[in-house]
Length: 281
Image (cartoon, rainbow, N blue to C red; front, side, top):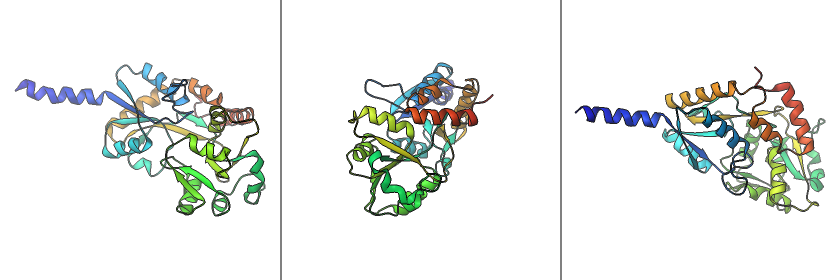
C-alpha cells in the first residue's frame, strides 16, 4: 500500500523537474543540424541556462513550430528558448522576461529592385507595409507559424489568399532562395537572417540584399523563453529570469547575435543597444 501511494508522487516530482526544450531548426537563432550545429544565439543562451540549473533534467528535441505550439496547447511540459510574445500565444504560453535583443523585422529586397518599393516609402525611409501588401504586382512570401509584430501580422492577414501573398512551409532557406532568384520581390524578416542566409546560400557577389525599416515598428524587439502556461511553466520562466538577471549588461548570447550582422546592421545594433539595453542592472 505504501509503495502504491509513493510511486505516483515520485513520478510527479520527476516530471516537474524535467524540462523538454523543443528546438526547431531556425538559423541563426537555433541551429540543430550541420557543421554549425549548436552555434545559434539561442543555443548559446540555452547552454548557459542548462549549466546553471542542475536541479532540472534537461531534454532537447528537434521539433517544428507546429509541434511546439501544439504540445503547449495540450498542456505538455515543454519550453522554447526564443519566442516573440504575442497576444495569441499568451493564452497558452508563460513568457520569461526579455532574453534576446534583436533589430526588428524589415522588408528585405534585392538591392537592384529597391526602386520598385519607392511608392511605399515614407519620408524617413520606412515602408508602409499595409499599403505595400495591397500591391498585386509585387510578390512576397512568408512562413507559416512564424511570429510577426501586429502591424505586419495585420497586413499579412488582410492579404491572405491573394496570389501575390504566398505562404510557405517552415523551409527557412526557401524565401531567400526565391528572393535571390527573383521569383518574389520581397520578404519580411530580421536583419540577422539576411547576412546569415547570404553566406549560407553562397550567393554570387552580384546578388545583394537591402533591408528597409517598417513603419510603426520599434527600434528593437526582445525574445523570450516560452513554456507551457501553468504553475510548472511559471516556475521555469522564473528560474530563467533569475539566471538572466545575473548575466550582466551584455550576456554572451547577445554578442553571438551581434556577430551575425553585416557592418551596417551591426553599427545600427550597437547604437540601439547602447540606448535601450533591457539587461541594465
